[in-house]
Amino acid sequence: MGIKLNALTKSLWVFHLAASPCNNCDIEILDALTPRHDIERFGMLLVGSIKHADIILVTGYVNKKSVIRLKRLYDQAPKPCLVVAVGGCACTGGMFRDGYYYAGPVDKVVPVDAYIPGCPPQPEALIDAVVKVINKLKGK
Amino acid sequence: MKILFYYVIFPGFLFTAAVGMLASWIDRKVTARIHWRVGPPLLQPLYDFIKLLSKEIIIPKGAARWTFLLSPVFGMAAIVLVSTMLWLAMLEPDNAFSGDLIVILYLLVIPSIAVIVGGFASKNPLASLGASREMKLIMAYELPFILAVFTPVIKADYAIRMGELLSFQLDNGIIFLRYPSCIIAFIVAIMCMQAKLTLVPFDAPEAETEIMAGAYIEYSGAPLGIYKLTRMMMLFTVPMFLVITFMGGIIFEGWHILWGILKYVALLVIIILIRNTSPRVRIDQAVKFFWKYMTVLAIVGVCLAFLGR
Image (cartoon, rainbow over all chains, first blue to last red; front, side):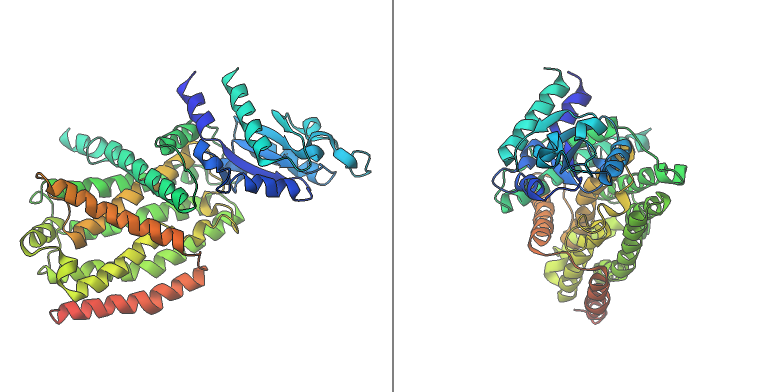
């Protein structure tokens, strides 16, 4: 395993992309940063700018308005950059999948590396997904 | 050759980077412990830096390409030079040139100016906002900082060389414990240091909840890594500057080395405590704080120094 990959897996900076969520998943993401689940001990930080991001957490159901932003932000992210779909809406569309304004689940728009089902998913599930992403990066 | 060694390896780049990373880790770890968290591992700043070096560099469309890429390098070069000069002043006090204190005061502004230039060059409204806030902050803290630093200079018989300042304190004891004027100046200097490092409460230039990352918003990959490294180096160099001007520096013999390190750690603890116990102030509040209170306090300190206190 190269030194670059080692450094990348130990310092994944997370960008939080809200593609019209109901805010439940977002609160659970913030919960992972609180003292109880403290993901900074794995070197993860929540960053404000997409240019600093290593993981994009997409929450919410992607509609025709936010799909443009999702594509644009994914293009702006410096590679290597991973995408994690958080919550039932981002994974499948959930109960809104038949809505007239629905523009497909996240993996139809950008490549997704990990899915976290749940409405909302627990912070433990989020950490589990990050472990899966790290294993994927390491090629296990 | 010797100068190159000084600049690149021992008191310069490598040493400053290593200690700066350590200081930044202490900062993050203590912050985490205050929040009742576990905090990042020891090598976390190094991981962050290596990761940022290996990431893609994106230059925004319409940005001033070379200014955008070179400004972080200038900032880092300046801070490395400051660190080299500070440590050489302590290692070989007689070797320094006259007026190096003034040169260091100038060089300490350059990292902030690099942030401003980079922010304006990146063609992003939020980056411009961050850069303009940084500019206001510089204008706010620079006058009290210079006044505060010149108070011990006045007390040490107008010693404008770092070496003279150090030898004066070697003969007469730590300067800020001796004179009331220097205590006042030291308090002002600590506040200005907090603003110089753009840490809470004076982190309006990069307030992550309102303007994302301020001037850093368009930076990615290696230039961002260099900015982060500059910040870590500043966390080491700026307190070190105050240790020399106010607290007698580090004397390199036996137990005095440990005592010198303790002085730096004490300043670092003060920085971390201020950072973790105060909210972010708005930029107008910051300017008001420095111009209304700190400058007046610094002038009082200078007047007291002239009156022989």
